[in-house]
Image (cartoon, rainbow, N blue to C red; front, side, top):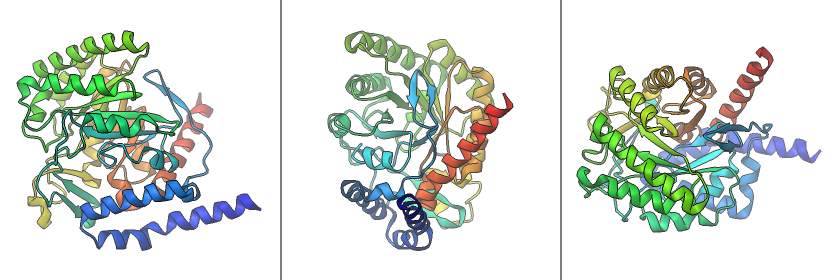
Length: 362
């Protein structure tokens, strides 16, 4: 009786997001809505109310990069920039949560307004610019987390650090995050820090990853623990560029690749007034571009390095397309803004059905 009542309550609460909560939040400016949402999630977690919204789906454990993930669905970096909501997002059903991007020193990010919705395209444009409290605060925020899933710690360079010294910032981030992270994500692909994407050039990427892998070995001995390093790339790269990077990843033995970040293309929103806004475009318009990059990566990496698929997952079908393209894990962000907790349930159920079919076929 109690289980049936709880299930009905969960269903009702989850289904209220699109007709009630989203119109209210979309009536606010996007950044205010973002902060209100995070504050509400923290309150719901402290009160235990969030347990009513967690999907009742059987455990779907999977091992990737030597880590045991409760399920294949993660929260992408950018939503919990400070690492202050890890437990609340974990309670929503995510198997892993990636915080950040966090830089060595605190920085306010770019001037406001810097976040724009395009509801007609289920898209978001952001030029936040790595606004974050700095690595020390970020580490403290996650140190005492109760979340039993996997924690990713996304690191970047400060805006005023020249690319010639970028490695210093990434080393600071890696050293600080290593004791508290389950994996460290290296962000080279945000379009909102000038020149950052130049670090995806072959020589620059190879030099950076070789140095980070050397430091990973030192830190592994010091902490008696191996923390994987993954790299996040852009969707705006040519096929040749993606294949070249895949070769660099194999050469440097990076532990994983996140594909992809936001796009600077405006193909599917060019008629919208916000299309002229600078920044990275996410949501439905990047779905196919992200999946195409995953497919090229997976073909070149041949299973030697796992791929985490992110970009435009708006429903369970989108998630499965990324798994079919070669991703082992998936992440969501913009889809959560548009669909709310129902998207978590939809993706997890779709993955459960997909994995069950795969097991029967084998």
